[in-house]
Length: 116
Image 1 (cartoon, rainbow, N blue to C red):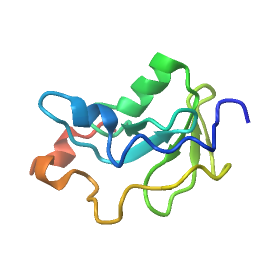
Image 2 (tube, helix red, strand yellow):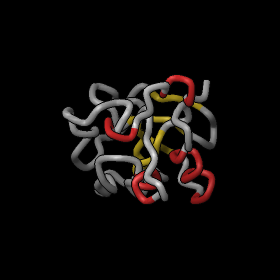
Image 3 (cartoon, rainbow, N blue to C red):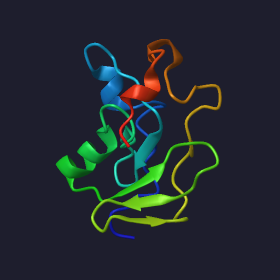
Image 4 (tube, rainbow, N blue to C red):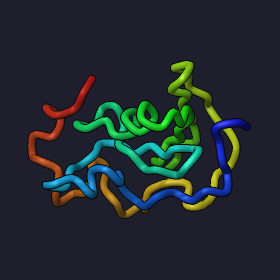
């Protein structure tokens, strides 16, 4: 499928942009670019890096990087697909990694920082 490369592994286990920010950020849930593997934070997260990645690169498809979720989002059409092709492992963030996370960066009032 155009815009999806099933052979590309994820860029890491957390939001690549939150990890490299100064100071490092935190996220609510993670999304994986289905074309290049970039891991970004969801639109409910304070920084919305997955959407920013899609806008900057034109990479239309993202897959949830949360355990138990296999859905894809098409940023171009603003449509969710319940499933899609299998992507290179791992399929989700490590089970021991908290959501929101990373645990040591999440503020006590984290729910006040989420986007609706």
